[in-house]
Length: 133
Image 1 (cartoon, rainbow, N blue to C red):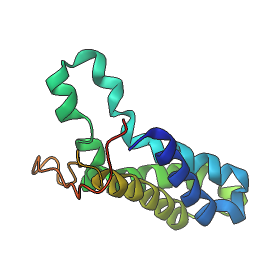
Image 2 (image 1 turned 30 degrees about the vertical axis):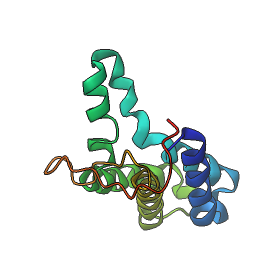
Image 3 (image 1 turned 45 degrees about the vertical axis):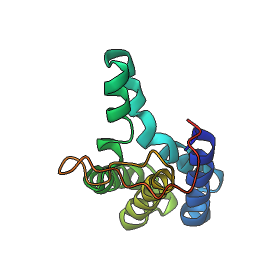
Image 4 (image 1 turned 30 degrees about the horizontal axis):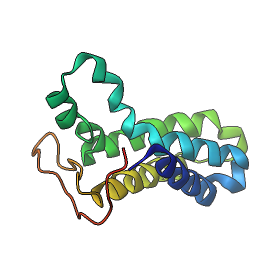
């Protein structure tokens, strides 16, 4: 899915979970975490075309990384906004939901996403949405 849609969906997650404590910063954090799984494209200069296809929506979209990222970034976000009343549980939940919705919407495309990496390279693809990116 395109980055604008991913950022908008992430922003919605930020609004729903962090607006009370952070105001518009919740939206901004949501936009950031909404596109974060797609930063795997930063490795493209070192990959050939075939490797790029297998790398994108790979490990960065896996359940394992999703959980690890939620724990790590949730902890960091809670530390950063502790004075505003953001708890570690709330921040972790926010990161998880935002990352999960990113992976889920990517799974609706025909290209799919490798949710089970590194154990399986199978791409979960519901094939309901055309690929934009």
